[in-house]
Image (cartoon, rainbow, N blue to C red):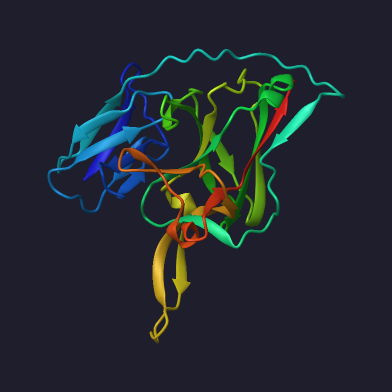
Length: 275
């Protein structure tokens, strides 16, 4: 099945939309022309389409070519002009401890997101504006791309909806890299109920590579389609701040290999706060 994601008001294609099969891990991403494709789809399922700047859409699956119209959303964050300062006070939140990590979140053929919750603290009042977001990545590709989404937290502390109405597309270097995204031009102040920074894999040809690996007891090597980048994590103890999105749903995820020791894999995402 093939489809096309369009802006309902302008009829322009919408790139990098997340298209998921409801309540499954199956999903993909629309390309720069708004097009997407599934080789196989389970019957009697629904598509859930999520894209920054648009209302979430849920539709029944069809075998024919689909044109899906998304309704634009209105956001209240105003753009501001920021003048550089030589002596700007700053606070570093969740500093990335190392440029190398032995634990990474990876993506095969399924589109998903992983998010980290940032809790508001009283000391942030002196530097309430989020200036930079830094993310630890590893990539086999010279310039793999991913999307950063900034989400509000609902009354239950779960990821709720996009706060900023635009994609923050980031590009990585090959190997280990700390990707820095400057959002200084956006008047984004740390919400008192906290917020989430989500990394979204893009299932596009530019990010695709073939992973070759061996399994114990097998003579022949296996090959699997993968999508870069990988996102660095570090085992942490305490309150789990990691969430994952797939099939139209968010859920808290500790990653079971570490939950035995009371640890979870914490996404290596760092914030720089300024006055």
